[in-house]
Length: 117
Image 1 (cartoon, rainbow, N blue to C red):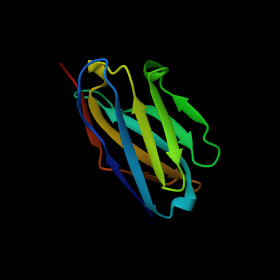
Image 2 (cartoon, rainbow, N blue to C red):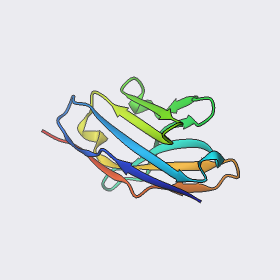
Image 3 (cartoon, one colour):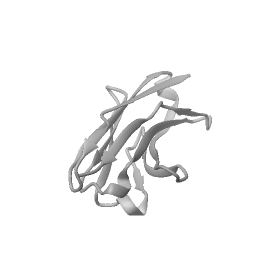
């Protein structure tokens, strides 16, 4: 079992920055990748970014490339999403997901990010 807790969401103005965190606990050695997803009001959940726990390889959804950066601190079992140049369309609930080597998925409870003037 892996438990995930997100934090750091809030309200930010367009063009601003925010960093959200996801702290993992439990059988963290079984984690293969960590990802951030988001669900905007009235929209389907979408994958934002992924990072491999071991090698730190990253992938991003096209609309956030160059603005968002996913990183990890394996000592702290924490994954971060640094979000810069935020736009109103980035407003969503952001969820952290851990995938294990056995392809089991664990989700956090989500953190709200609102981009508004």
